[in-house]
Length: 178
Image 1 (cartoon, rainbow, N blue to C red):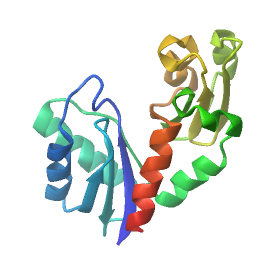
Image 2 (image 1 turned 180 degrees about the horizontal axis):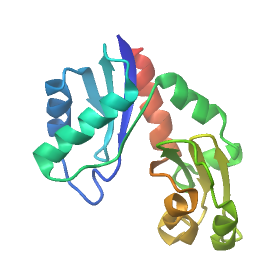
Image 3 (image 1 turned 90 degrees about the vertical axis):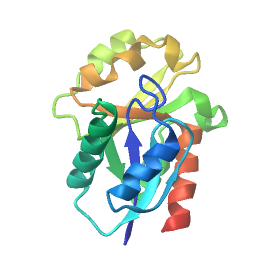
Image 4 (image 1 turned 180 degrees about the vertical axis):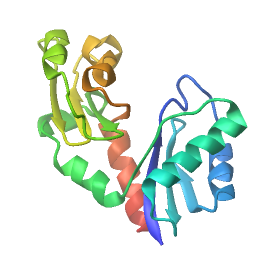
């Protein structure tokens, strides 16, 4: 069995979906040892299935059937999440974990418009794109960041963001199952 991490966009934000219900839904799909992290669409589970795109589609379809909306689901392995953490280009920002966000992208952007993001960047903000992960250090908060609001549009790829504390805690959960 393989351990996976599902990052589900919009749960806990635009759409409320109790994590107990998410656990039950994932178990109905045949996923095992399901555990969630906070009320924002983070789940760690084990599965015999190894086709990640198919798992993403099945979870999205099940949530849509149950709740009437189809969230973007991005599945990572613990190794992929650990690599994203290790590749953090702003290690000094880890001391303020709510200021550092990683946006996990559905795929590597084919034609990212980083110049557009640079034009929106506040002087205090820094960003970097590394493969399927977009890193943003926003000391004034992402709620006030014009850059944060335009990440997907400028990259041309859907994604879902998590702050540094959440990313690290999700990895801890995943490594306990591995």
